[in-house]
Length: 278
Image (tube, rainbow, N blue to C red):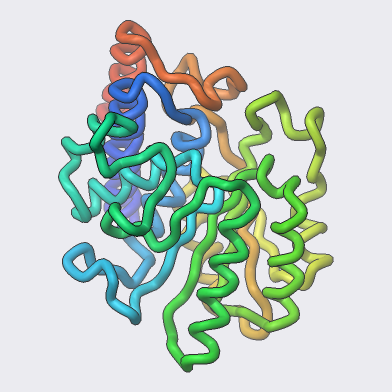
């Protein structure tokens, strides 16, 4: 990836992170930690990779994205808003009474959301169904599903994975946001799913491990996933929970807590300083 494109993506991801912090602060609730860790991959998919059109969000030939860990809706909403699906200013209405931006993605009311999600473990099954539908209909669209590393402790994830590999769904890419923290602590102390790459490989996936904040590695992994035939791909991305906000990084307590006014100012200044540095 050339430097100009990389810089552009970094700036966009920074705007996405600002939107996340703004939305959660305005809502006085939500999940900033995992939203911030996923921001770079989501930025790459929506601004560089996926075949989508904000003016035609229901195009039957579009690529699909399923946010299986639906609680990081602020990240998806911020990406969609910055991509042009709805006004960025609407992020301030997150979780407010009467707002269409609910606490979890809602495909019936939010432009660009391909699947309602929030019950952990279920989103991947929906994505597998979409990928199978593409195969049966001889369609070329691709399906991406993002799971949390704590979420993959759910058994339904592995049922869906077994089915995806058995059906040779090479149009499916599963992305695991491995920030090593879930609501109750580090995943290896709560109910360790490690080693994650070996598990997906055992289920028949092509597996790629990357730094989820490095756009060069993200691009290479996504390109490899498209080239692999006969099996689905799992991208296991190592990330930092709360990425970009000094006091949130690697802090379990910021899994599901909103910043107060003082913390909001610090967070936005952190992100503004990074934008200047880049």
